[in-house]
Image (cartoon, rainbow, N blue to C red):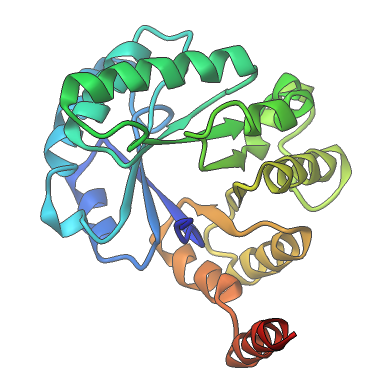
Length: 256
């Protein structure tokens, strides 16, 4: 049975106060961030802190994932091994551009699971699609391994790689890429995760973009602040009328 991922809240692994706020949130998934949110000189300490956080029973009700550092960094190997051993439910893999890259991560995670005595395929992978090369390979990446539970679109890094100003994901070439990611996820039967909304105070704009994402076929959205979680959950939670309609359809199909 697939896991509900309406809201995926990024939690910087650089400060204890962020952990406390995350614990009180209503997010379905927490993404503890070892990448952009942590300065290079603080990454080893942040990794050690997360080992303790992942064992905290206060986080047990969440899907506990970690955004590791990219494959071409000196932090990648230690991130994967430490977080799998520490009990992470999943790894968010930034800048996933090729099938070969994600298969390398998959193999390494398998070895780490064996070393930790964890069940095979107990750690999910959530690749971040955020480069032009990745958009072109999105369909293949989404189907690369059964360990991939979903793919997420990163519109900020995509804009940077395209050489354009940071653009909203609601139109233009960024919107086109956003559509490619959701189609790839749907074709592979995995969860499509919409991009973050950067204007934290603009809840109205957040809701509008989330509704557009839902109309495109997205099933959840990454959040960068706890205040974004409840509005996102509200969009992705079916109304009583929608639930009743679905039940009627199921009943009619069963009767037929």
